[in-house]
Every structure is written in C-alpha cells, then in structure tokens.
Figure (cartoon, rainbow, N blue to C red):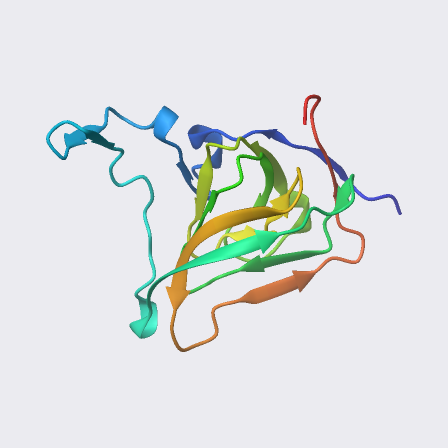
Length: 169
C-alpha cells in the first residue's frame, strides 16, 4: 500500500488555529511601546497552558537535525497535560505536522511550512510530529510543562504519510 502524500502549505494563524497559536511579531497586533519608547513588546502571542497537575512552565532549547526528504511520518505525539511552544533560533524555515485532538486518525494529518520568523504553540492534546528542521542543524526555544505525571502519548505509523514541500524550500 502506498503512503498518503501531504503537501505542506504555508503556516498562517487562521489555518493553524484548530491546533494552536502562531507566534510571529510580523503578524501580531500593534506592539506596546515600553522602556521609554526604546522597545516594542509584541504581547501575549500564545495561550500557554502548563499548570495542570502542579506543572510549571519550563524554558529549554531543543536542537533538531533534519531528516532526509521527502519526510515520511513514522510517529506522532501529544501532550495531554500542557501546551508546547517552539520558536526557531537559527533563522531557518521548518516543518510543522499536526493532527486534531482526540483519538488519533492518520488521515487527518496536515503539514505547514513555517518561516524562520514564525513559532508555534501546540494546544494541549494536539497531535504533532517532533521538530522537523529543514535547513541544517537548528535550535528552537521551547516553553513547555515541567512536572510529575505522564504528559507524552505516542502513535507509531507503519505506513505514515509522506510530506512534500513546496518549491523554494
């Protein structure tokens, strides 16, 4: 049986809303001017949710190595107790692969191509692939839950979809 092919589409807040938030200064409402007008604050760009069962927000850096292309999806994960936010630090685009909350259904997987100035915040329970760097070793600032309890479910895919990137990536 041939694997399903999914074409990654450009990441935007409207299409990504069922899965989480797009974190991007260029697409944010007008910034707040702070520090005597010397700083622009792009305020409250993601609905972080890390406090379930005594959890707290933690800040980490994840380093991601690109997979060979085209990328076949072999595993999806979700964090039922918290959101998980990623923001790229290397100035490279990356791939975001998600599926809706609830019972996992591989036919509901979709893919987004994130620009280097866009981060994502997966809402609690949203299925997603781990980080998919595209242009070399890439660091990401990550804000997620630190705390007790099981907060990672995985689904293995025997013949998962293949993600195809648009031109220019």
